[in-house]
Image 1 (cartoon, rainbow, N blue to C red):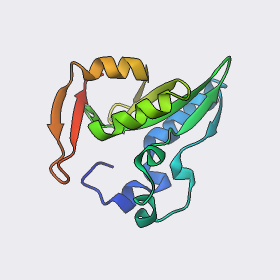
Image 2 (cartoon, one colour):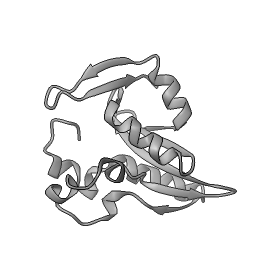
Image 3 (cartoon, rainbow, N blue to C red):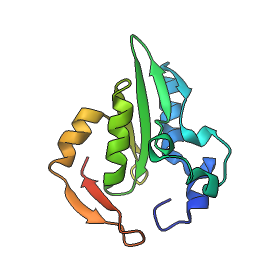
Length: 143
């Protein structure tokens, strides 16, 4: 899935390859977690868009070991794209407890873990581009 696919298709459970890969890895490593993200809700796209952005960007999981952390899953092909609009929401969630990311390279079937702070550091060096369909700015992150 990518931005060229209709939003209804991108929001289906089967479309989230990164979350499925993350769950499999967390289970294999015996890491305690619970689903936390907005996609647990059963709402239409129209209803979803009425919800404030920070809530729409709720992290996908809460993982618990010695401490609890949020875990956001993002799949990508070739280059990771992080929307500028999402950064404020990530900061919002990181203020409650540490936010980490599971980035899944859908082409090479490889995963990468990264903290919110490390992502912020990488963004400072990232190339900036704009999605042609909605003119939203994003950062190209090389992992």
